[in-house]
Length: 204
Image 1 (cartoon, helix red, strand yellow):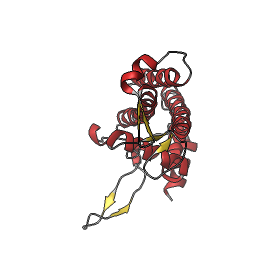
Image 2 (spheres, rainbow, N blue to C red):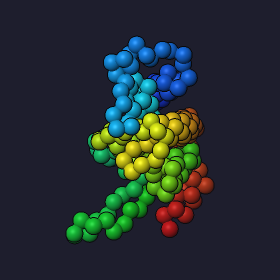
Image 3 (tube, rainbow, N blue to C red):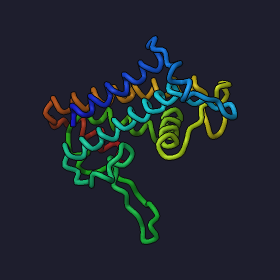
């Protein structure tokens, strides 16, 4: 898993560099792929940026898969995502969510570095920038995210500048999560009382 996670990150980072920093001339390709319709831009560069954002976000989901197996949380592989791995969801008889306690396996793990990954997850739930990242990712993966060549902001799309900004932000977030994950693994999952206290305070 670790090698796969690192390889996927490197691949996404390469796509970002290819679309933003390389001198490669996309014009011969874009003769057939780049076009503008209703002020929206399509083409290889924009496509690479969108795939880059997807790639970084997919790394976060694979980190969650790793945590699920490493801590033996017992979740089915198909149910594990970065947004779902941390809590048990308790529903009433009407299937309404009434509580989302942190999973005991995470609280008892004592892997201090995983605290930082959990804090990043909380930012995705609470921070506006992180909510935008999740929204953009879902639109790219499941619907569509038009890129406005005029640079404006509008309800269903994003400016090219904003797409670049969010892709680079997600690259930094994903890199940090990988570093925390590797640190936790190479520390051998040492049980630290501070880690338990951290999750215990969050649970209250």
